[in-house]
Image: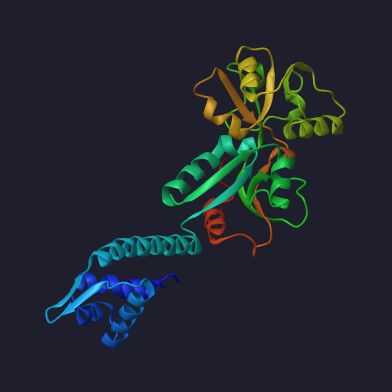
Length: 305
């Protein structure tokens, strides 16, 4: 048996609910003759009488009752499919892979993602956190649709939009002599900071590479006291007075009230690092991706991370 088309099933359901062919045709705003022809074709297709016609209208046969239940179910599925496709087309539904550096996730990005998912519950964000090079490469090779990374040494062919400032800070235990006479928010010179023992990060973190280059420029060495692999460890060792540390602002400000630490931004221009949103060519990606990028970049680029 050939499968009945959806238009024919709609005609059958409308007539069954209206109790007559003319009444069903009016519900559909279709000519009565056209509806009658489709019902006759449907009965010929299934090889059974589905409607008993009389002066008072139509009545479903046993076979007609079965067809009605199945037809209603099929039309519900078709409607749901259409709604889903419309939602994808308008960007109200979809899945986006987002690659980001830890500095972004620990800063404003977490709040931005939460706000986005509240506004667009049908769009699912798949977040992967990694080093700057890895996050940028994921966007460049198409593994991720969008990224939030440090605006530094990015692969060619990417479109970037400013996202947030995330300058390098120096932190120390509360009352550390490094901060004597320095007002909150006032910058500290890097060469002054490295007069003290430093808790450093291992694994080639981007901030460490930046500091090493700066130390070479002023022909000074960094006195590394301990080397750790996690920023939680760095903050804890700084808190107990074992040295100072260098960390992005996003990894400082949220911890100042909870830990016995304080911090100031570095005064050098090279320490004023920026985060940016990156993607491939503007023509790539669906509407949902564009909605997320607009959401992320709708803030002033000078907003703090």
